[in-house]
Amino acid sequence: MEAMNDFLVVLPILLPLTGSAVALLLRKQKRLQAAWSLAAMLGGLSASTWLLARVWSSGQPVVFQSGGWLAPFGISLVGDLLSAMMAVMSQVVLSLGIVYALGSRDKVVRYPAFYTVFLTRATGLTGAMLAGDLFNLFVFAELLVFSGTILTAASDDRLGAEAAFKYFYMSLLASAFLLLAIGSLYVSYGTLSMAGLAMRIASNPSAPLLWVAIALLLATFMIKSAVTPFHFWQPDFHTASPTAVSAMLSSVVVKLGVYGFLRMTTLLFVEQAAPVRGLLLVLGLLGIVYGGLGAIGTYNAKRMLAYSTLAHVGFILVAIGWGSHQALAAALVCAFNHSLIKAALLMLAGAVASRAPVKTAAFDVVTGLGKYMPLAGVLFFVGGLALMGIPPTNGFISKMMLFGSGIEAGHFAMLAAVGLVSTLTLVYVVRAFQRIWWQPPAEGLKVKSDGDRLLAPALLLAAVLLLGLWPEPLVRLAEATASWLGDPESYIAAVLGR
Image 1 (cartoon, rainbow, N blue to C red):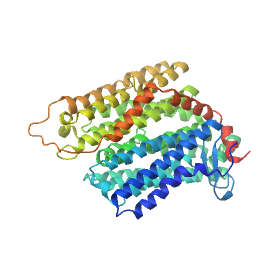
Image 2: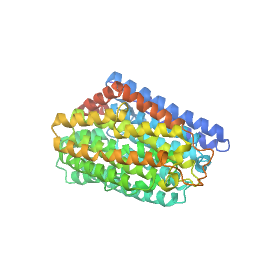
Image 3: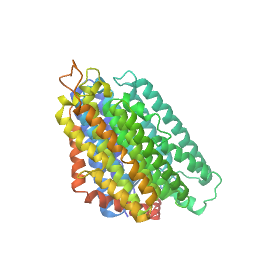
Image 4: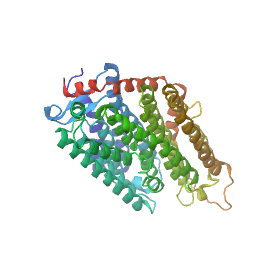
């Protein structure tokens, strides 16, 4: 077992948090502030990668017990395979979010507090993944909410404030649900440590408030991951928020809900997991259908990609609902790959909008604008192939693992339904590509000579192709993580020191 109080698990949180404070001190030196923020985020990513490598090679979590108080009484930070993998996934995309912001023409990225709040957002997301107890997951999630609200309200778009209010109040509802769930579990079991709860719930599954807590946690994570029907705040958020912000939400921030579902069904409520998984299956299929139809019917490229996220989160929920080892591995691969694909496509939509006479991704405005951006067209084509699950991209690997896990478990009717509605992705991706890059621009269209840089989406799509051509490392990691999730006793023993 790794030594307790190993500080390595703290670094992925501490580096962006410290970076945000220093970035505030550098607010009058714009270039130095931006360079420092990127360095802090890359430092956090390096620490997360080191943590993942350490956990994967040793087969044991890295645990930090704050103040020397052992779980279940103290505050624990836990880097196991699931949390370390999710932290790396998040910080890869967040790092490239800063790269995009460096080349963005949005006014908001030049505000003195932009990078400070962005790094605070990174701290909140990473901390929520690595928290070993529900209360500190709540604290870090609140950092995520406040920072996302501020960054959206400061958007160049006049509807940014409205989108920020919707995001804030829906997140406030999720926070209320989470606090009520925390109270219910604490009253019933006397601890909020996830390891302690898992042990005590397994020994006493008949506590009167247990199912209340399960329902409240489900509602919390459904809002966090914009699961249909808790999705209605998300399209407005994407349409109005700065691209560097919306690309993070649609790709990695929604994965906090996915992380929560995985912890619920594989650690906290193992004996109660069957009805939870059944609900996730239903909501996943509903999200695939509704998200696909919404993406086809919308009027804005960024909004289209927001609805697309509803559908792809639905694919992940279906895999979690199946619950087998192979299905959980498929869910993890789908989550990781979707983060790269969706961040890249939203950045490309933002780059196109930045060249429009009025900065917007509305199809009526950007139709034909791609004629002036051929490189963006090539990149969008690659991202579209990945979103549709066509080789040689990582999206193909995701779909193959998902369908393979369904065939293995004999879920043929569900597979047929998923396969049928997944063709909706082809419709809206081709439609968007045709309108922006194939149709002629309107007469007299005045295109801005300069716009957002394409470096960040290009790097993300290079990773998309790399993981499509060489998926073995990610697949092996996902399978190892799925095996770890199938043995909750190992997590409990590592955190509680048993």
